[in-house]
Image 1 (tube, helix red, strand yellow):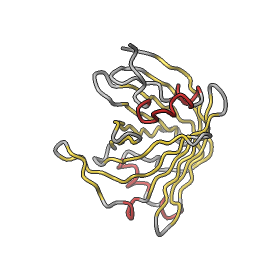
Image 2 (tube, rainbow, N blue to C red):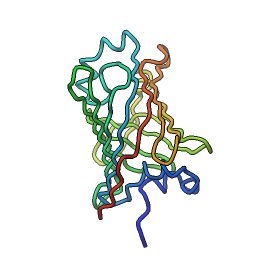
Image 3 (cartoon, one colour):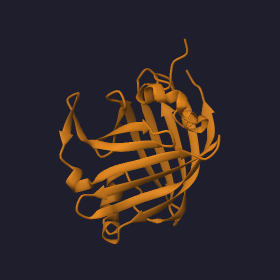
Image 4 (spheres, rainbow, N blue to C red):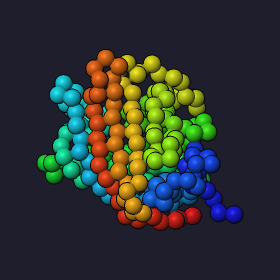
Length: 204
């Protein structure tokens, strides 16, 4: 029997209802080295005071530490051989010609949740839900991986809550948006844009 996508158990019965482009976007099978290549562009917006923290953001090797319109982005979404995990590798082409890379690792958590392990040493927990029109990715908190366990971190008031959505355009393209909402300062960071599923490779 063929192995299911790593995300099939996350979406559960809703997996079959996802538009084809979104099933392809989340195609890597558990335990495989499957590759999904996405190509697109994002408009990145930062609150003026938050943009002044760009050097610190860059050190975290996570969010792109700059703003701009139609920033080219290439994403490699790869399964991990022998493990229930995906490598999430994003390359943002800066306006000055340099590249900012944000690489993380996703693993299933509860039935509808994934944990994303960040380069800075902490993790982000999120749920994935199909509402009939789009995928809603909702913040469930920050975590500290320690001695094989995931300990809750009270960082919502420091880093803000992350929300994202993905919506099919046609069989090859989808649009997405993400925003970081601080409880006191409002929206401090966001991006939105469109991506094409340029290639899907099945590799056992």
